[in-house]
Structure formats: structure tokens, C-alpha cells
Image (tube, rainbow, N blue to C red; front, top):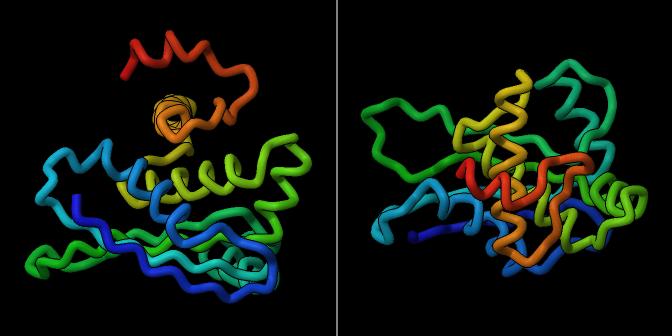
Length: 164
């Protein structure tokens, strides 16, 4: 797959290297794009809590910061462009969550980028069945990246593999 990832850093907190960001997104999209000739473009914006709070209020009606938001591209069918959309990640929230959940920064950052990428592909977690499918995909992708299952109480990975 030909993947273009554009990264904008609009925060002062530590963030992953661009190659690590690209690696997580590529791993997530590779499950969807099996053909090596396929192209995809994703923009990633790394933001402060203030910017994320504003985006979350405008787009989700929630007046607080969050870890990741995804904005799938809404291009007309006649426009042939590989743009999938935008992923916005709040560095401070991701770092704080990693610490609170006893995860490495790298593992949690990868999880949030995979999560955001799957949203761009149409995955959601509003219903229990959707959440289970999305969490299963996240777990498999993160395992491929060398990270443990990010969810407590999730079935054993052998069971998850049999579902995929």
C-alpha cells in the first residue's frame, strides 16, 4: 500500500517520531488495503488539551478533552483522491492515560493511532457488537506491532485470532 501520512504538531508535549506514527497507521490500514497498489492519505494533528477540548465540544458536544478524534473525509464519489481523513490526538491526554493505565507511552500512542485509523475506515463502538469487533481488530493490529492487548477482560488472543 502506498500510504502518505502528514503530521502536524501543535503542542509542546512529547510526541512519537513521525515514523512511529506512520507505522501504527500503516498497520491499521494494511488490514483493509490488501492490494499494494492502493493508496491512502491520512493527516494527523497532535494537539494541546485546549485545542482538543474545543474540537470535542464542537464536533461531539462534550466540553472536555479526549484522547483521539477522527474525521473521515467526505469527498464526493466523483472525486478520485485517496484521502481517508484526519486523526487528531491530544498528547497530554494520551501520556496521562498511559501512566494511569500502566502502559508504555509507545503502546498507548500506537493504540490511539490504530483506533483513530479504524474510525476512518468506518469502524465504530457505539453498539456492543461494534465495540467488540473494533477492539478485536485493535488487539490483533497492536499484537502485530509488538504490543499487548490494550483491553482488560478481553478474551484470550487465541480466541480473537479465530474470529479474524
